[in-house]
Figure 1: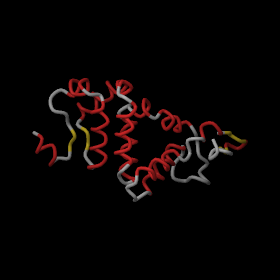
Figure 2 (figure 1 turned 120 degrees about the horizontal axis):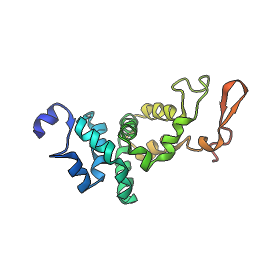
Figure 3 (figure 1 turned 120 degrees about the vertical axis):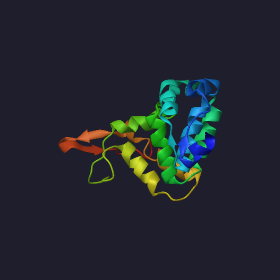
Amino acid sequence: DGIKDIKEKIIRTVGNPHDRFKEDHLRMMRAVRFASKLGFTIDQKTKDATKELGANIKNVSAERVREEIMKMAADTGNNFANAIKLLDEVGILKHILPEIVKLKEFQHTRHHHPEGRTVYDHLIAALRQNKVADPMVNLAILFHDIGKQKTHKEEPGGKHTYHGHPKE
């Protein structure tokens, strides 16, 4: 039913998704890339299999994972943001970019960053503003605040500061 899935904008594996992902773990990332690029949804059985098998992405060579990330980043910032969020939702992001997931733990002061309560929220919002389909620009946006996890301080009154994060 491939034609039907395309018309309904659904990403689904051929046959059992567990079997397909066990044959090639990178297929989980490809499903995310296609869904984010095309504006499709991932079939629930396929998504469930990805959640169950996501840790297996660590068995894929770093070069192949990097290539998938680069392909995702080569799209608009909004689509790349969708890919990052979907990688997180299906449990793969924590295995390939744990530093990004960690940024959910760090608060932003609303006065400086009204777009979200965490550094992660800020990164997603910043990506969504980029209309250029350039992997280097998207990766720069994704990583621009990565140093905040090492420089975070909570000051009296609940103010969160990150002095020196660009250098870090």
